[in-house]
Image (tube, rainbow over all chains, first blue to last red; front, top):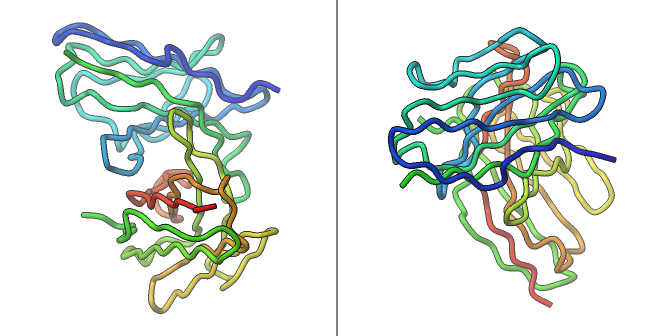
Length: 115
Length: 114
């Protein structure tokens, strides 16, 4: 009964490097969402994707951040030229469909530390 | 600009008593509200939700109350158990923009004392 799988669980990057975070949604789920949690704060929406499509990226920083959900394989959140302020927990969630009767199922997150 | 606020960062309750967690929101476009529970080093787990057409939803020990005029919702847990100790997040979504863009509060750490 695999839930939403995220890897790696922990990722350490030096300033200027690239970070790649992966998310495999629950079986049968075609909607993927990325959220970021800064220390002492709630989760903040970043992007919502369906297979091969970005539906809503209104929460994504304009530069350095990108996301994809290809036809095959996991969803990827990519952060280029990381800075210390990118240090956070990044959570992926999935749902089988959109709409209020379909609560999001979250993975255990990737904790990114930028040194 | 916090549209969903949880003003109590922490709450301690004795085992067997009622836990009441509160949440306020400012955006009148929100029409669906959820509570998530989060243990350390894990992702949030969905607990219970309520649509704006209702004022109460109950699921076992968990009840969520919604007061639309006050833009306030609360989660009641009764009786509280030590395993309920976790961070509880209130979240809201609306019909504008992405239907699944949840706005989260900052969370309340609940500690249930044995």
